[in-house]
Amino acid sequence: METVTTPAPSQEAVHPALLKPLAEADIPVLRDAYRHMLFIRRIEEAAAKGYGQGKIGGFLHLVIGQESICVGSALALRSSDYMVTSYREHGHFMAKAGSSLDSGKAVLAELWAKDTGCSRGLGGSMHMFSAAHRFLGGYGIVGAQAPLAAGVAFGSKYQNLPEVTLCFLGDGAVNQGAFFEGLSLAGLWKLPVVFIVENNQYSMGTPLERTLAHPDITLRASGFAMQRDRFVSDDVLEVRDRISAAVERARTEFVPSLLEIETYRYRGHSMSDPGNYRTKEEIERWKKRDSIELARTRLLKVLPEADLVAIEDQVREGVAEAVRFADESPPAQESSIWSTVYAQPGTDPRRM
Image 1: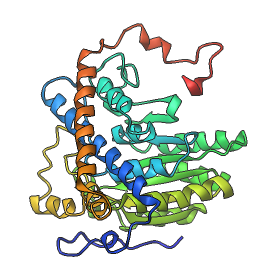
Image 2 (image 1 turned 60 degrees about the horizontal axis):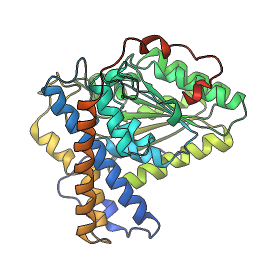
Image 3 (image 1 turned 45 degrees about the vertical axis):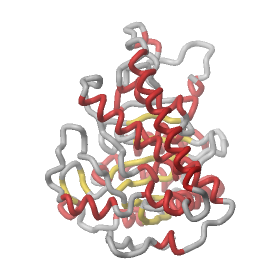
């Protein structure tokens, strides 16, 4: 696959997505994607507020600014496909679970360390999990998810199941040995896996030019008989289409891919990071390309604004309900610790 050169963010240029008509079939898709992305952002903002109120212990890594990758990738998958992610995974979990009200409740309850959380309040921000949704968790060890994702894909291929695994990593993970080991296994065994590097321009607080010898991360696929692609995250429909192509290749031809999606996080690496290594001007340049605002602008060309206001009201009410649910849920139970370590006799661990 041909690698695409990513243009630098511009305040003046009209986004290419606004210059082409929206296909009729994509109108309801984009409307739902707008709702999903907005719900993820508002849940994340509620999480940030909860952190400030002392409701969350430990780390908190927000996905604000990167929502189109979460939602676009979920649109490219079947319910039977898998996601394996890094520790910045709240949005991915919600997207894989359909960005429903229940998914928002499960995220906030988990962050609040409540028994109703997606990991029974035992995982917290970095370790969300749902076997029912084929969401196999966030991982706090940088790059460790790459060989795990290869293993999940190997299991699908070994059992002749038409399943694909998406593995999400940050740009800071691509210098880890485990990253290369995962790619090597995927290329050698022709596994149905797609590795997606969410390049948000910084490895924690270190800019890319200080960590990468070459700016094109996808070049690393060349040594592993993999396809590669590189694009920006602005347009959620383009994200869907580009990931869908890689997913289809993996599913039907057993050809793995390495994708690099250029994006930007508006907040610091975590809540303890003030982000003072960036300028306000840089952040504002990227906000001019915000995927949620772009989706809203496109929808206003084909839908009345009242429809979008109704979605925004629905999201606001849903987030408030999710916060109430997390506040009122019982705390995590000590008795839950061992019940989630091993599969119980007579149960299918993939459905637990």
